[in-house]
Length: 275
Image (cartoon, rainbow, N blue to C red; front, top):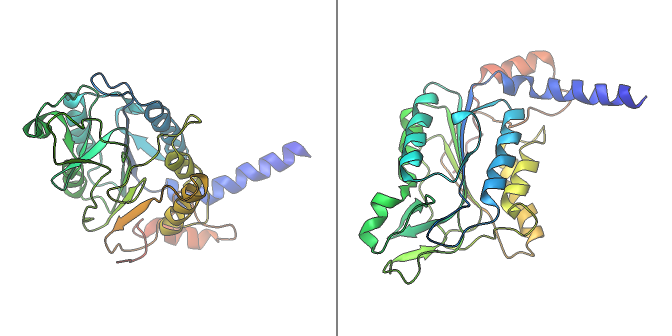
């Protein structure tokens, strides 16, 4: 009886995800923990590994074959370029980053593990401007772009001459067909977590695995889960442009007919319009 129930569950999961698997999904997942010149972070490498395991089950192809951990600037640049090439013509492109991040004069930067700026002018050469990721995604012609930033931790370079550098990230304008999810509100600092994963990534991995909820419902539930787990100290934030169509990470709800699943698979795999 137990085996029959397990078999039924597996069959249901396959049916729910069949439309999703028909899409071409490409993801670049980066987790930086082992910083050499500033405070190391406990969880980003673990967070990136968890997200990769989740995305694989959801039909994503991973740039580099898996989680890219503790990358330096040269490697980061190469990965972003490869992401743009691998995503060309795909239905969905997804970029996930966990690690240090900061804003300088309104521009958001992700911090490679070897970054060691001593003045503000060093930032452009030692860190990765998130705008470069967005431009690669835009040029790939992907129907839906998703950017997930668990990078809103404290500014690790305070007192090093980066006077205009702030902890947290600035809100960015989402290009057409793009959704940007921040671990916390613009300008605020997110928690790294004390149980093996950050509150944001733990909630993210759980919610994107649930069938039957669309992309906006998914991130609303991520936000509510993070607020609950942090006692309202951290509130995830969303920036999006109007997007055509519907998108489900893990397929539609139970009861969807085969014909309607085929219609979903043929439709642009994006989310409902929202300002």
